[in-house]
Image (cartoon, rainbow, N blue to C red; front, side, top):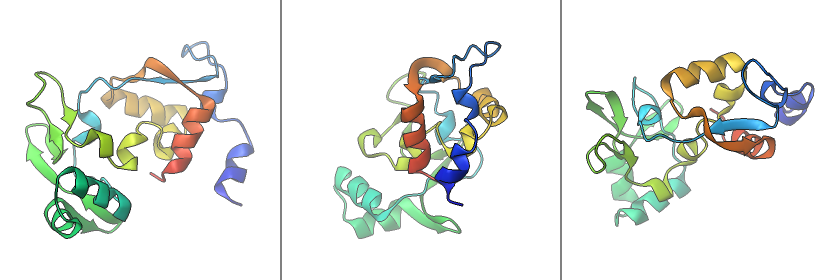
Length: 162
């Protein structure tokens, strides 16, 4: 059974009204607070495709080979952006905590990888209400701000496999 067929067997938890949680079943709210928590913490991966590497290299005025050597490393899951050790743990090396006081901004935002663009609507985060609530403990933007429709959520969820 493919993923789409398995998902259609029953409605996703976020498509079911939940008065206690303040959800009407038409979507989820998320607004980035620029806290940097999704870009920092324990060791992890920011997986990048060849196309994403090429776009990032162009943005930084580097050759693909130089960018790959300097800014990525091979993991068991594929090629990942490098991290740097900070007071916050391991930050993505493109996370900038200095330019905007009190905020963490992405230095390559317009060309950030799909993994970054789809947060927090990763399959692992929206698979259950419990997983969403766990993510909410470290992401202050979850359940706040802009409401994403069911279609928008599903498109982002289906775009990546995290």
